[in-house]
Image 1 (cartoon, rainbow, N blue to C red):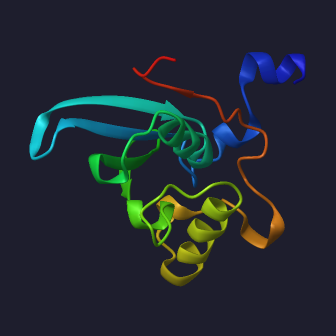
Image 2 (image 1 turned 180 degrees about the vertical axis):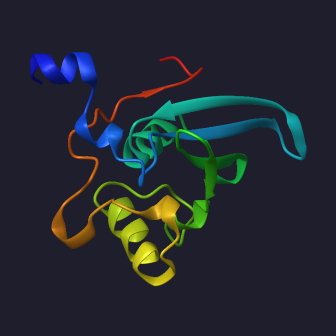
Image 3 (image 1 turned 120 degrees about the vertical axis):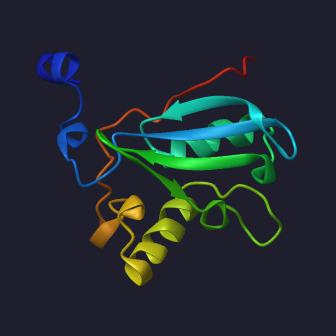
Length: 132
């Protein structure tokens, strides 16, 4: 990472057509939308890795792409396999890319379009309430 990137952050953070960060809202009790915790990552793959490492079930999570002035939900079904397990990289990237190509929904943009990930310059580390 260059000195410029340390002060200004990754170049992709200034691209307003893709999410600034990603958030997972994990509900403590099924059916109770008032007790939850949030986890964040600059990339969806980093966030999914974090959820998988901490054994967070996909059914208890809502995902969001966070932009400067809005947040948009992401459907968890594009982040899991047929056995309801979190997808790993690069499968998560391919799944989201394929959905974007079909739907053109902006919150799925940029993952591996035409061979290049728009998030390549970002850290995949996630932050949340779950500690090792």
